[in-house]
Amino acid sequence: MIRGVNYASAGAGIIFSSGSELGQHISLTQQIQQVTDTFQHFILTMGEDAAASLITDSLFYISIGSNDYIHYYLRNVSNVQSLYLPWSFNRFLATSLKQEIEHLYYSNVRKMVVMGLAPLGCAPYYLWQYRSRDGECVESINSMIMEFNYIMRFMVEELLAELPDLRIIFCDAYEGSMDIIENYERYGFRFTAEACCGLGSYKGWIMCIVPEMACSNASNHIWWDQFHPTDAVNAILADNVWSGLHTNMCFPMNLQDMVAPKPRIISSQM
Image (cartoon, rainbow, N blue to C red; front, top):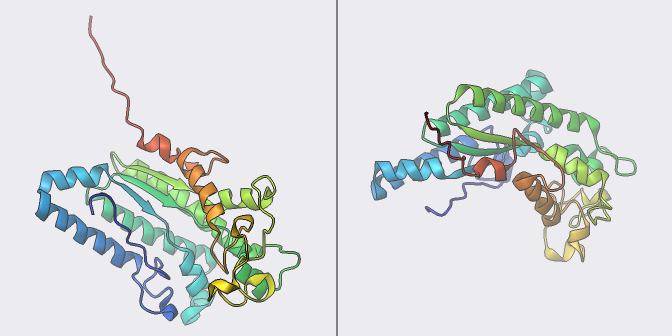
């Protein structure tokens, strides 16, 4: 485990019940508890000082939130839309995520990447559901996502001001993804709206169930299925997170700069 642990759970969200219709899953709060359990294991096996050093030097990558829209808010589960306007819902999600980040910090975590959300309004499922014309994205959904990312970026600014020694960056997946969609030919894509695997208009009606449903070349598609981008898109976004190779989408710096060793300052007195 000292080389890396993945706590991700399919269908999980920031809200406990997000994705519950998909079956058993592990919410963000439960994942953070698993992280804490791992830390306790490190303390027992290597000692408190060594464990603290390992945790402080480790990088934590947090990418969650899409399912809170896909499987909760946009489905209006428990009539949530009558209780929360989009702005209030976005603030609730961001505040909840900020609290979990603070829990990590007080467990000696010091390096974090927080990913924003991609443009769900451009996902094939919503193009099918909203009967998009010519693959035009659903602006009402994208507006929610942009608003959430804006709040998350502001939250990162707050955390940097409030928590000493924290090194945290926010990477706007919406900005990076829209750059790909708008400049798809430059990146070698042919299909910006239709998924590689699925059925129905934009292949967004029925999810990818068997390999035979998939297209012959996923690398020229932006979307793999109803909601997920292809590996080719993820590779571009990963380059942006690391170094801003294609477009700068991380604040206040990219990952390469964040993990670079700090220069030693040697002073002398005459």
